[in-house]
Length: 140
Image (cartoon, rainbow, N blue to C red; front, side, top):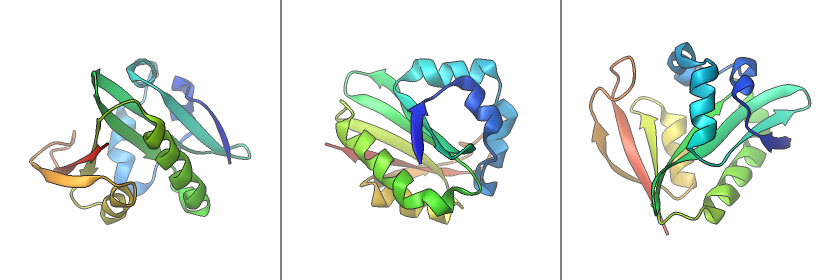
């Protein structure tokens, strides 16, 4: 897997996993630019295939929000993805990093817990389509 700096155009090369398809309606240059401006972010490729994009969005000193958009084919590189994201979070200069996971996305809940996030609560109608999500936080 090759990790490169995130570019807004990478969103167009990403074939999202089913649980994240609802977010693709927001994929445009403006959204991609906002992710890039938000804080450190990167993209992963398996050869020429886009596997995923991830980063953190700065909120204020010592607080950020983690985000990840993963390909439907990310499973073949998941161990590498997990290690890259874990190392990225370990090096992040924030005492608190939050993540939000769709309430029905079991694999997402397992992954954030593997990344040492702890569930803090249910957020009703959080997602763009009105679905619920859970907030997680990773504290140093």
